[in-house]
Image 1: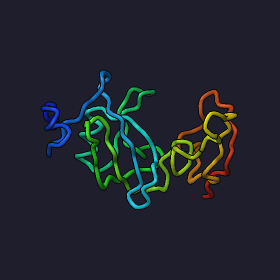
Image 2: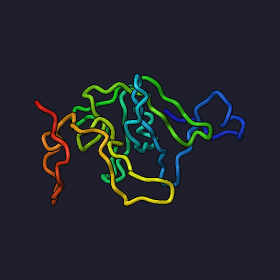
Image 3: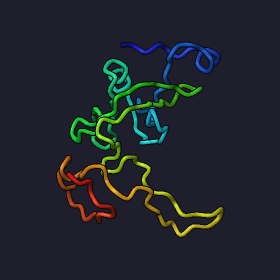
Image 4: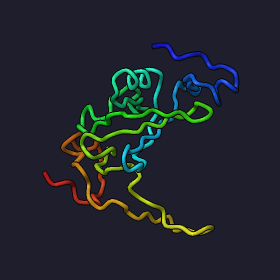
Amino acid sequence: MQFPERGSLHEIEEGGRLMPLFDERGLIPCITQDLVSREVLMLGWMNREALRKTIETGWAHYWSRARQRLWRKGEQSGQAQRVRRILIDDDQDCVLLMVELTGGASCHVGYRSCFFRELDWQPGQTDFHLTYLEHRKVYDPVKAYGPPAGSDAVQHARPAED
């Protein structure tokens, strides 16, 4: 699948053809949202192949910047994302996937959403404290991925019960 070449500003911003803009690294940001609740689940990155595979299969694929490889969400953890809608922003430089979760979580550390903490702040002041919005993990990431190499991470929430 070859994506169409970028057209005129009018075609990009108001036209009826997908003409995604990938950055200098060949990536486009992808926001993933729950289809029903509209909760933001994660921000990932796609290269051309990830976007193509997502369109072709109906399952979310991303480009891992850390591992430098393509991956299908849930291929190891079982926490897959069935894509139901694909939206593009006005400049066609950001993708929004609306998904159904197969396992109930999107976050690789076990929470439903990657946005499981909130900064305590008031305009102009903060002590940088984060409040947990989710208090239980949906799954145990150690069972899914094994223990992180060199990790001394503290478990703040109890893992999901089997």
